[in-house]
Image (spheres, rainbow, N blue to C red):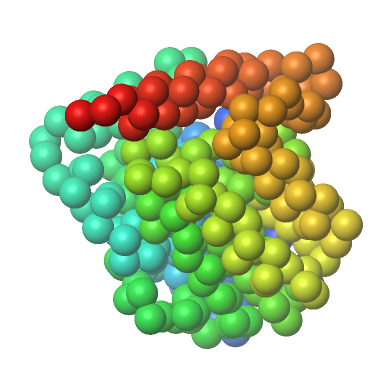
Length: 276
Ligand SMILES: [Zn+2]
């Protein structure tokens, strides 16, 4: 079911990790961002669109993780985009014959049969200088940064007051850092500064996973994510409502992600602190 969150901007929620697909209405059809996860969910979205006489004229993936790179044949064959960096990584990771089997191993076993991988990651990279998604509809500004995943794009639809955060600014997921880069903490903080700079007139924040937030939540979530990253950096005792007894039902596993990040960061600083 499609739900309107701002004029001409609608959300379709997937069951897996409360993933949000975003539909933006344009002049000749819609832009579809991170379409969803299970086949029946994307088919449902395709039905909703065709019932209201709309076709998909462009697609976009916010970052190179499997749950943001899916597509369904019934959504049609519009061109799908990502940042140049995102597209290059996807091309590289999916280039060999065993790639899809590796991706399937990342998907929870209870839904893997329901996740169609045949159209996975068929995206065209947009040049780094390209500040907007090329399509005939409201301007969608690309805010590229390297938090969470390389070539990650958050998207700002200024005239509708909507910030599509990708996998940041969630009420249920903590910041999940890309720990394969030189300075994951600073990359994350830099991305939050970019989002803060863009959030001035935002009334609606759409996270990749979790609940849609209003104007107050945009800033509260930026603050909450920053506090989390600061606590990781400074090894502070952390009080974050997304971890521990205050976590929402079904999200208790996020505490395990937090423990994993702490351990990997500790190993990194041990390694970096060892002479020679
Ligand atoms: Zn995700």
